[in-house]
Length: 211
Image (cartoon, rainbow, N blue to C red; front, side, top):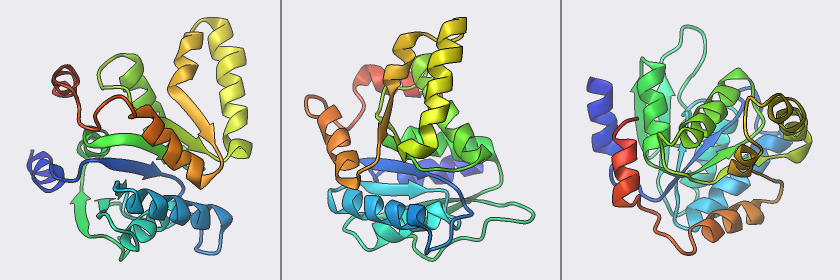
């Protein structure tokens, strides 16, 4: 409960924000690290706070890009036995013991999700937000997968297996965008909100009380 209280208190003023996910294993010289940093910088300079998991790899790149930009850089760190050391590029830093409370914070304040290449943790966060939106437990926001070479096989499997078997609807695929260019990531988010507010409507806010 204390983690929820601290999270709500510290993050309530960060709107609009974008949550960025991806592997903790990419070093600073990796192309995905550099791409993440560029995307985060562009989003930060466009007025979006950046939220990451606070650790190394893509998380560090996201925080670093935001830290160098105009908007706050937020790290939602997790205490793990052998991994996760907080990166130094965080204007707001929170540390969680419980994954479930941390995951709520990623969703609660996000106006978009940007998902870089990653492993099981990244897939978990991606599946979480798609499921919440599909089941109308959360408002719809842009979900952007970056790097078509990395993600296209998974999306093809969704289309050719899950849709074919009837375990998801074909329209569920419309919840997901695949984009490679950093400028197009920013444009896609602004395009989505062109005729709506970044803040949740009253109905959407009521939905998110159930997170």
